[in-house]
Length: 311
Ligand code: CAA
Ligand code: NAD
Image (cartoon, rainbow, N blue to C red; front, side):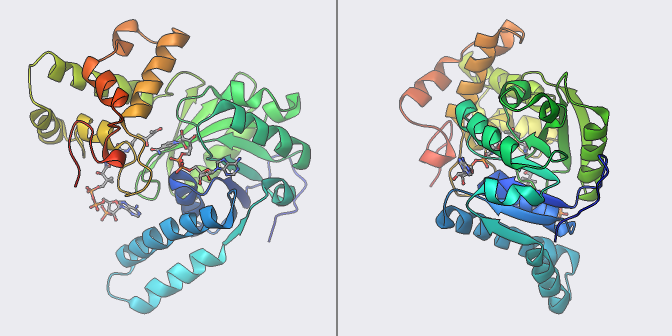
């Protein structure tokens, strides 16, 4: 199942995805669709089952779209995708065969560092480590691994919903080497995504622009200049965005009725940026209604109420 080529720039064939939540399941799915050998890891069989359920619903949708009039081909495609996915509950136990690790676990620096520290000891020299973090500096996560590993440690930032969003940001720390970067460009192409490169900076490219845009939309409401609904309609029909900014901040985890992140996450990203002091201060000015909603536990779609109400 695993590649055994000795070269340092070997083609990535086997991938461990750690975290079978919304993002990890999506990443495992698109890698398996591209016929990479995937092992999806989470803490318990129950969590793994949740990941499998996310994949099952999405891969059926992809198959239907690919072969609209042929149920036989649809189920062949679904079965073939599953044949590239194994699961496990101990990343250290399976990392020996991995060319690439993609970490998509909870957004907590200590938990991520602990995972990578133990993986570093167990993984072969050539294995590339990546994190899908949205808001933590890659170098901070990577610093608990050896110097050699830090040359093979980058950000690999996917977007939600992974099977539909075509972009991957490859985040380059000061230590990452050119071969690693090139391997990541190759593998993202093979899984059907377009990659862009970015330095290890707050929000990388997309969130650096998206978060201030969402915050400014809330300030328009705060100043009483337009309604929530009109702002969402305006940006969809006037700027061609698929979702309006408030819809997007309320939901944050688009498209899935589980564990939405929402307003609490938006607020914590902005507060983190304000503390780091690297982002234009006007972009991270607090918005009172956001602070109030979060204080009351109204985090958006996951709690049934945010700027909008969800039934
Ligand atoms: N699995 C498989 N395919 C999916 C899918 C899923 N879960 N969700 C959507 N799709 C596919 C559909 O099959 C459809 O494909 P075609 O156009 O080829 O037919 C396509 O995506 C569009 O889906 P729909 O027609 O059902 O719905 P839509 O046109 O309303 O699009 C959407 C849905 C793609 C989510 C769109 O609303 C969108 O792009 N929204 C914005 C999402 C966004 O901004 N995401 C980034 C959030 S920021 C982030 O992720 C980074 C971070 O760090 C927090
Ligand atoms: P999620 O809560 O849906 O999934 C996280 C999964 O990780 C859970 O299943 C949890 O059981 C598992 N997990 C936690 N600790 C673990 C450990 N030590 N070992 C193995 N598994 C562990 O979260 P998500 O939305 O998929 O986000 C995952 C990562 O992706 C985060 O770093 C987040 O910032 C990033 N991200 C999220 C989005 C988004 O829109 N949700 C977009 C891009 C990036």
